[in-house]
Structure formats: structure tokens, C-alpha cells
Length: 164
Image (cartoon, rainbow, N blue to C red; front, top):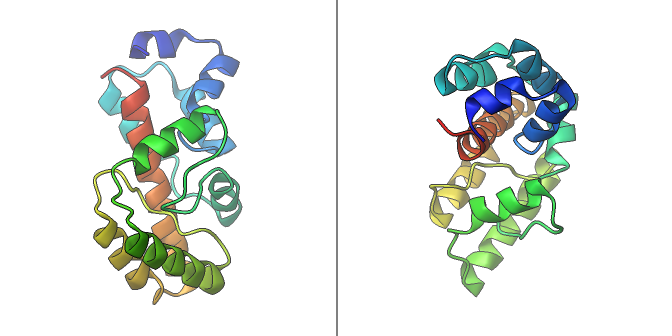
């Protein structure tokens, strides 16, 4: 969608358009209210900085829409399509899939939530290394990491949804 078209959408349609980027009402409402944006750079800067940080509750709500890394998102929603595209480059032979599943389980046992990382542009080995590194984080430090990954995913999805 062109930025000028996004800027002119009715608020409810603009919110529906943004929701697959990251399902955080405060983030969506802030972006919709801040329109019009003069450029994609202005939109992305606002999306990344002016609405941060995400709260623990916002992170939990957003994570409900993300599958485990290495698992295919189910359904035909825009979020599921985006997730499948973001994870499409992962090389998942049986050995790697098993290691990724074990890393996911360890992370979920440690933090009681799904491991989230921007998969696009990363190798499976990089993702595994990041999961192992982040397992050593304290809860608050890990919440900051998850929030940053959500912002990166939201920006990637904005870039893929808004012509810039």
C-alpha cells in the first residue's frame, strides 16, 4: 500500500492494516493517530521509538500471534502469512529441527513464553546461538530483548506492507 493511501484510510481500516505488524493496541492507536506521515522514514521512526517500550502485558498479547521458531504458523490470517514468509529461509533438516525444538522447550521452561526472534535474514545457527545466549538473561533483560525483537518484526512487516 502506498503511504499516501495509508495516511487517508479511515481509522478502523488503518488499524486493521497495522495489526498484523504487531498486535499491540497502544502501538496501533498511536500510529493511526499520528498520521499523516510525510515519509516512510517518519512512519518507521515513530513506530520504533515513539511508542516504545512495550509493557509485559503487551508483549504477552503480541506473542500469542507468533508460532515457535521453526514451526509453521497455522491458518490463513495475514499474520500467519507474514510469519511463514519470515521463516521461509530457515534450513530445517531433521537434526536442526530437533535442536531448534529442544531450544524452544528450554526457553519456554525458563521464561514461560515462546522464544521470539526476527528470523528474516538470520541463519538457523544464528537463531540457535541467540536462543542459547538469551537463556542466560534475567527476566527483565529478556523482556527488553523480546520487545526489541517485536519492534524489529513490526518494522520488517511495515517495510513489506507500505511502499517506501
